[in-house]
Image (cartoon, rainbow, N blue to C red):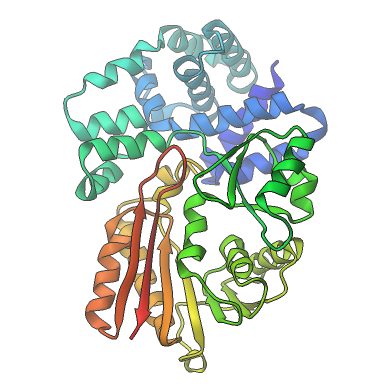
Length: 426
């Protein structure tokens, strides 16, 4: 039996039955089987897991065309065997249909016993044309939902804020493979020197429109000695713009109120040339340890961590900070390509709930800003309710603040979707 597909199946089963995040389950299983798998195996397992999870809605629709048993009545093992095989048949050109079907039947023998005939019968009928036919659906919401495997409620929400063409593009790009982007650590090196080091190690790269960001063609950054030495860190270009827009100066006292795992916190420190003070808050000490580890690896000494809930107001911080970064908790609609589980774990009701938390954090932390100070509010979401609408609600009740800069980055092939708004205390 093919161990790569069996390993992928175990991840999919755990994700499905435990409501777990695929990246976490996948990492655990790969770590436990590291000595048994080569790089090619790891690549295929990751492809099968992320692809199947991302395209689940569309895959289930196609399976239901040929199944006489309703999706929710099929055993979880068999359903995920069907999903994984259907993903291969529809979306992976390099894997012959016969191989996908045969391996699925072998898995069904082990995990479903008498279900082999059922699995074989369905998969023999599945063809790439099943997907192509979805393009003919007239209803815009249903067509986009099925073509791009996006929940209908989310398509409807996006259509409130964007045109049909924009929504189609956002949803399409949410299914693409995210690029591995790194931010060069200016405290330790520069672009020219790092590129020489990459070339010396035969690591493929491509430059980006942002000077300090480079895309690498690698599977695992943590294995690269240059990463361990702190010459760079992983960060998407969109996320990298938050610290640049806040633009702290050497000697500033800065608050990062939602800091873990520390990508933006350390970027602030690099911009400040490691001079001044950054207070980094997060809810859990275990997550703050990630901030400390990142700072240590990058050679940063000005970050002080504090376990704190930024939604709870404290008088002692009033007028204390020159600059504040609020990368608030959000629905994460802009980073679905990195975390496809978001599509299935979020629901429409979450918008109102999360926006209350976001506004509360903004209301509290805005009071911690010195007169003339600047604050950046950001999310990796692209819904107006979490972004533009929320900022307008805040400004309506807080007229001593004004917008300095506001940008929204729609999810695209190059970068994640993001919202960044810089406001100033008058």
